[in-house]
Length: 238
Image (tube, rainbow, N blue to C red; front, side, top):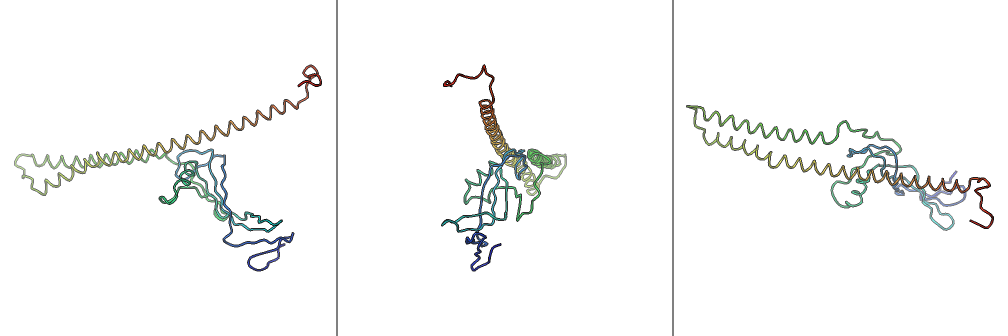
């Protein structure tokens, strides 16, 4: 049991001075293996990055300061791509996406598997954009058709401006909005391809490492295993 003294210091069972204050903390990062669904990612991850921040204390022992992590404050999971973006985007944007896993020891329910891939959203957005353009064209054609009916009233400046606005709307949707959605979709696909590539490379690296360890263990076991007399070398030979 520690004895409370001044300035947030205590003495442990060994007589060492232990400092503890609200501002003291530790942060660590780990590369983890295991299935994970992460925020803002369509990929089923088998590798991810975990960042943990915890409370800490400092013990003076053997003329050195020893930092020990205490209760966890927060832990977050990130994909390799999100981690790389986090490291390379200092002072930029709104921050990198991450998946909150624990806050003050309380587990946060994850996003789970996506109900539909992100590509479905892009398909819907393109369909809606094209539909807006077609509706504007249909409305302009209807007004022009009405104006060409025999004995119909000659369209005035107001009616002509309405037709022009409808045609401009259709043109804008086709020449600006549809290409924009397509560009966003291409960038999304490239991002997901890069994420999937990193997942594959991470899996292969881990598997090759495991195979290397298995091969080394097998070699060691083979060398240490008892050998029949006909396999044993004469003394002094290797």
